[in-house]
Length: 428
Image 1 (cartoon, helix red, strand yellow):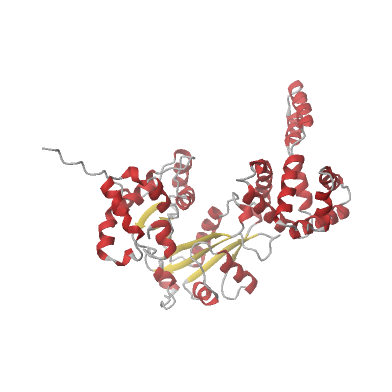
Image 2 (cartoon, one colour; image 1 turned 45 degrees about the horizontal axis):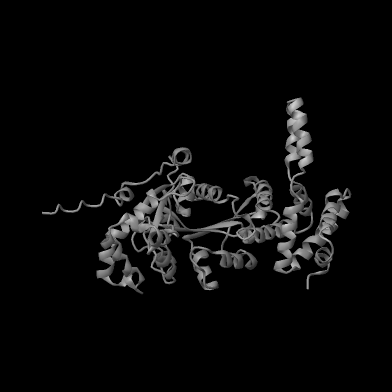
């Protein structure tokens, strides 16, 4: 059974939701408006998934822009073009939902509930495309509310409150953390760092975090970095900072970019505290490679070559020297093709991790064979990992070239992976 407040809304005529929402929009007293918003948020949080969906669909139906006001504003602007009539047109074109969400956000804990509300919108978008305007309004407001100027960078270490450390375990999206011992292995040693962005309204909820390893060289595999029995190095002897895991924490903030600011600010923090660091790189997954290879990669190979990839289905194939050696040249050509030539609808690389780092101004420095032989690494990327290099002297140049023309800054090693297929011998 639906909670009291929403049960009242959905068991009576649909117009009742409009009346309740209208009362919040027309509420002039801040205290009474906050009380109404608090009740609505509490009831939404307690509601079933179906009731939440019905609520969101009614928002889409009843809280768009007022078409009559838009038409009147257009007529005023047409009759008298100017800054004031343009402002009036802009205000008229804004959906009523945006003001509704602003007022709901005044309630204590309102931002957190609205972020979860957008998670519900995103989860239902595929089956209910009519929610797209609702999603657009959420995103428009969140881009402003979670502006970089409001974000706080914090260093996460073993002394950080447990409530936040639990979130790091929960939200780790690249290399799973299995309990407190593994978490301590990533945070406590002097050659390991972790940084996260927070927002003042989500006190203990990280928005995004990055894990960093301090090393003496650019790594080519993840296992040595995460090994429980490894010997930490003296941070003063480190020359390289490796960003080996970047995790977004709030699904409801999808489309609101934090990562580019995070990496650049962490680089600045590390340079300030450890000026002896000379190299800043990632050790990144290639999450879309195997999906592309299985669905579309056949066109890049002969039938005999592609047939070789059947060995990828054999459990433990990286442990067989003969199988791995036979596939390595073909897989390296395939990964090079995927990273450099396979495009997203935007014209940028299809691989989301590559698109992210290249847009930040990094260069595609090195592709690592069998860099991640975990079940996930083999399933998603045939074990490949990539180093993206953040060269501070050319970051802006790389970003501009990528943003304007899609140009990928890459090393010779990666370019050499994509070579022409040898010509078939002439028949006698």
